[in-house]
Image 1 (tube, chains in turn green, orange):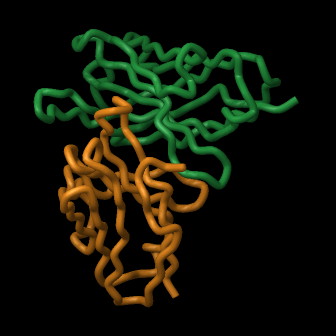
Image 2 (cartoon, one colour):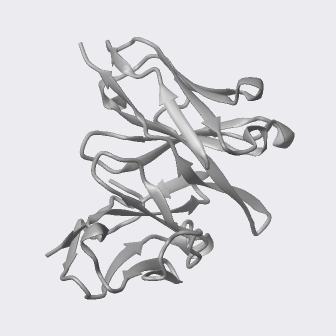
Length: 127
Length: 110
């Protein structure tokens, strides 16, 4: 059974930093592309960013609102995904989920969509 | 504002069939697969439909997905009380170069 467990959330002041972790089990971690998705209180889902498997280059992509402030990394030896969040803003307040991704090739383009989700960890940015 | 448009709410009575719509554009739904998720209050989303109309193992065949042009739909037949949840559509957006989601539809079973 696929399990994803996030940790590291909490209260942080605007401008501060936080690092989230996501431990995976029940699947071959190093084969998977993985994403972070967030959900502001009472709102919908917003993709944050993704990291490819090391085999596929291990590169990252980010949504515009977080680009330059957030960074995704992975340690396959620890089956752990990370989200480093810097220069946090009040609008970053949300539950952050890590996901495994379904990868498709459509018209020669590689696309990814979240598949399995962790239980989420709440990040509150407030003074 | 979400990239994909869903009605904020839907409702039905037990046993009824309900559909939830999801509208997009040529850069997202029009050229990519559509996915649907179910989210119970206080829990993580769970994948319900992938590649427009495929169900992961364990998802009942009461749930079905379809896509036409730049719109997609999720249909739930034989409505049950446990279907009361928020439902989200998602797809890839070629312009934004990432996954995009609908705003979610809260389904109430009357």
